[in-house]
Length: 123
Image 1 (tube, helix red, strand yellow):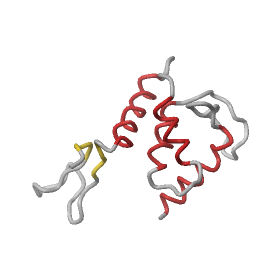
Image 2 (tube, one colour):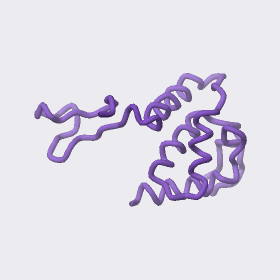
Image 3 (spheres, one colour):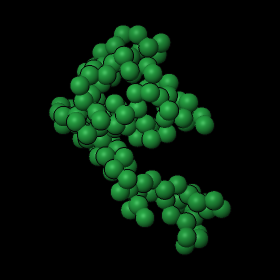
Image 4 (cartoon, one colour):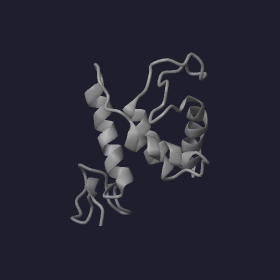
């Protein structure tokens, strides 16, 4: 429930900064002012993944932006595109992030064979 509430807050805040296939600003002061920074494929991806848990009325816009955003360029493109790729995999439904199952210890301390964590094919 907490994650859903937080995602909806992000969607509400960034709805004023949505452009065609991307957000228009990605850097803000802590109080939400001073918008700058241009678009971000990583944020576009994060918002699309968050839309899977959101009830925000504009959640479909965030998912559409994921499929239409232009490839990042510049100094941080590898980091941006890495997060974007993981978001594409997650939202497509072909992959999911699997956290430690109930009763399993987090990696690297897990001992049970049935415990696994990470990016795995969706069954």
